[in-house]
Image (cartoon, rainbow, N blue to C red; front, side):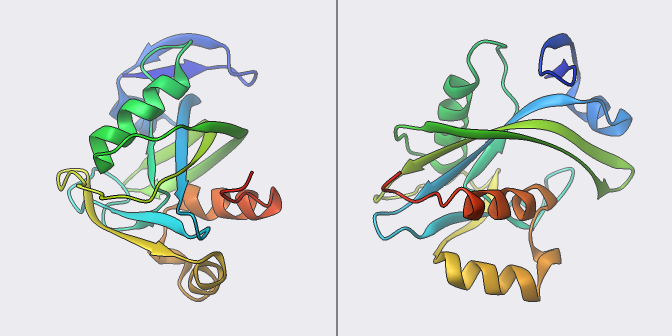
Amino acid sequence: MVLVVDEQDHVLTTAEKWQAHADGSLHRAFSVQIFNQQGDFLLQQRAFEKYHSGGLWSNSCCGHPLQPADTIGDATRRLEEELGFQTTLQPVFTFQYRADVGDGLIENEIDHVFTGVYDGPIPFNPQEVSAIRWVSATDLAEEMAQHPSNFTVWFRILFEQLMNYQISPAN
C-alpha cells in the first residue's frame, strides 16, 4: 500500500502500490542515499524481477512509507530490509516529480530524501538488490552523463539535487 497525497503532501487515502503507479496517483515516497567516510555514493542495482525499473542503478534505498507520521522510521526499516544494515538517517529535502517508468506505469511522487554515513558490511537482500557498489560523485556524474538510461529516473533527479545541496558525509 502507498499513501496517496495532495500537492501539499497531506494524506488523502491509501492505494495498492501497483494501482497507484498504473493510475499515476500522487503518493509519498522516500529515498535514502548512503555515503562512506570518503564521500562515495552507495548505489544499488535494483533486482531484475522488480515490476518496474528492474536492473537499473539507483540510490542506496527507496520505498514508500507505511505510516503517515513515520517516514524516517519506514526509511530506516527499508534500508535494513534491502541492504541489511542500519545507520542514522538525516532528512535533507523533499522534491516532487512525475515520470513514465515504462509498461504503462507512472511514478508521481513527493519524495522525502534522507542521507546517512556507513562503512561496514552490506549483506543485501538478493530479492530486492542485484548488486551494490561505491562510486565517487565525479565518476558517477560522468557515468550518468554518458549512460543516463542505466539509472532510475528518480535517481537522476535526486543526484542533481544532492549535488546542488552539496551533500556529503560532513553535512
